[in-house]
View 1 (cartoon, helix red, strand yellow):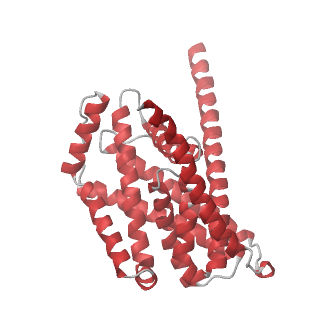
View 2 (cartoon, one colour):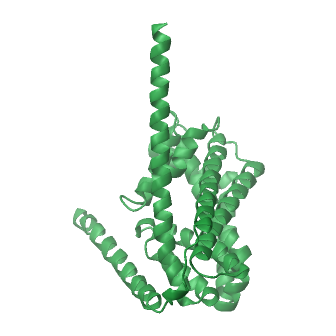
View 3 (cartoon, one colour):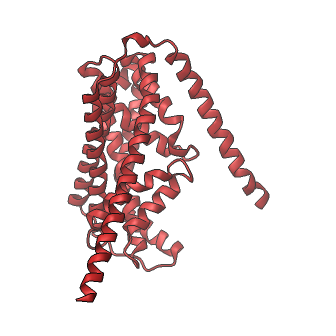
Length: 316
């Protein structure tokens, strides 16, 4: 049995390389057809893209704050902002599980690790629901035309299943199961329709901000219409959620780009959709690193200032 466990990383690596190679080949075949003379760079729209990504990160931090309040007092803003930004550095290496674990560790207050774990899991589930919801609202008609009503029905059924999982009875059962595995007391939860609605609303706002950030990025590179931005805003959440659910792929590498090409090629054209998928991956990764580093630097300065203040207080 242990011999097969050693083979799992090899199998995972082969799957990732296959997906990345297949999608990368498809993207390359379209990008080489791009008319580079028609492209331009508009710094004002790039700045708008950065601001919209900041809104997305703050919406995630606010969702963490609501999620932690379900199990006690809400986490401080500095902890939720750190949980929304710093773990993004771990999406590629070691991977998604490390990202979730890091977010839980940043939200915990010593003895409440189980509370933080479930707050993160709640947030992840709400994230998926809100992403599918934004996608269906903005791109449902386009998917029905391109991929048929069966795919749209499948997505709607999946959305209903995710919403049902948020029911307190279902989550209570999962809570007891994980508590038993972690050998910790079952934490009390205060899950109500108001809290769930607030979390979904925050995440819908966050996904809209991220999609609009991609829309501003696209408009800064090539001409786009209002309909193009609407489709981009809906396709980005679905692509990111799909990449997250592809557990074998680090940060959804290859899966996200393939979904973006699939969902946007009928509106933007395959060439521009492929270009946006590649540039968007690089742009978002750069923003994630920048925001995470900025959070760490600010947190370090705050700790240093607090230590100085404590030392002065002790001397007095």
